[in-house]
Image (cartoon, rainbow, N blue to C red):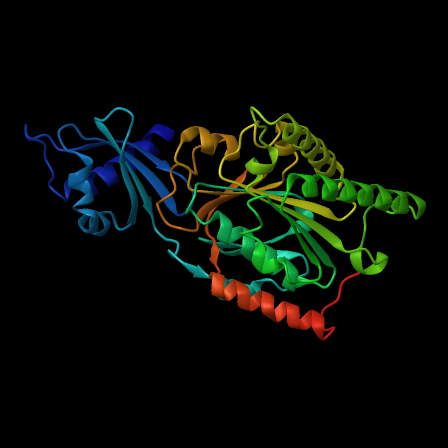
Length: 365
């Protein structure tokens, strides 16, 4: 029965491809050999296509869309060039989603928008992750996503402090510096000092929780802000140098402190967001990776990169669209178009937040 169902799917797609009347030099048409239903919207079709290259199909994308009754997202050769892989969908994501389209979704404290999926907008409470990794190659949307997450969290509540570790001289995080509840750290020495202080704060909160028989900190009730530690380009902070031993001591200390924080800090209301171009055991320790609940992975150029972040090749197969990524929590992987917030819009949002703190409309503990 299973074989019959598969046979019927293959025959149906074969009929659609035959409609295009494409033939090789010897007169043989392409042959559908496999149909995989990826999810309720997406299908992957593998075609045996001897003598007919990818370019000929790409040139007939509109005809394929019409014949198949689905949107053709990707056409690419398989490892064996005699076979071609088609990624089809009955519903497509937009190529751009404005931050302001998603903003109304963030109605709960400590919440940010992940992006628009085929099932609608996805939002996430930082407390339930409790730590997050953002990865992807340059130009894919990693930095924009990181900043809009920070802005969303800042706007969502009064009970928040941000510690942003940006060892590229603070260039990326500069717009956040004017906020009274944000501190930007620009050196390895500063990063170690802050991580030590935050570990001490975590220990202090655990002592408080033990004394009052609490399972976790409630920021409003216990007058202790949630703390977000954001590390921009984590590889700069955590990758050891081959020649600078004094710098390596600071890096090793940073790795150890991060490991301690990420294992225990959720109940104390302390959360980490790490952003990086590449994730390896040299850049982010394996023990740290194991304690990260949410992963946003933008386009990866290598299979190894996608496998390291997601454990599969989904980030390698993403279309070449800025802001398109895979949101992973547990064993669930969702393709999303992340919200876009321009630099001018970012500065406008942060200026408005500065004004709210000056007028005491916004405060923090």
